[in-house]
Image (cartoon, rainbow, N blue to C red; front, side, top):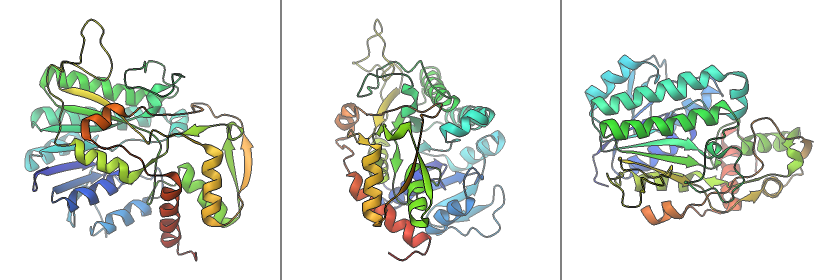
Length: 353
């Protein structure tokens, strides 16, 4: 990718957004990041991530621009007028939309959060990309869109019409919204279905953080479906390398692999495409737990529970399309990723190794 291109990362203080910002800055790109710094999980972790990007986080106010390795503006995607002003001022070359209300279980009790943040917020992103044309919009979807599907491994052209929670439904909606804007207004869009991203600076509501915290504190923790689950755990560095390679490769019109008589979800005549982004190597949840135990040198106090509403028992990404498109395949081993997370966790919480 050419240096000095300007990239907007929404959700830059989030887990993936933070790592992507570091990666793109190191590649010589001009990165602007926005985040509303909400309290879905500890905002101090988000602020510390920003500090790692050399952003002054003292007395941050809405629309207060701070310079560091990135240019940061505290902003909410729902603030349409401020979003329009930002796009008008900056004239972005690329946009990576990672801002979203996360969490399947939270969506069971707070569904409106997902409509406001994930649907209305994403609509504002699309409207801005329409008004101020960009070379490529890359946006976060989720493996959760596969819902009830048991066709393993999940393929981008499988049905995604049976989501299990409003979180998944909001991500499915994002895919459909992006397609309509690609078709009507030529907004080049690539959706990425993330598969269980983990690694240093990860979210405290994710399993790796929860399990590690409980083990280091000698407390019990819950493992659902009695541990009979598997996930395609994907290391965050593999995710951001994939996004970096994707940015300069927007989809083109009239994809020759699109068949209008047998249309599939991942391809289109419009400037639109969908990829899975996973490790392509599912791991049993209990093997994941045991890997954390081994790295910490402790035995976890597990409380087995039944399957939670909205959860699926297994995920597994077919990533051949992505590999062919960008010549890169995520492949970091779980043991290596967990080791790096534990190193981060101990340093962040000032724990002795």
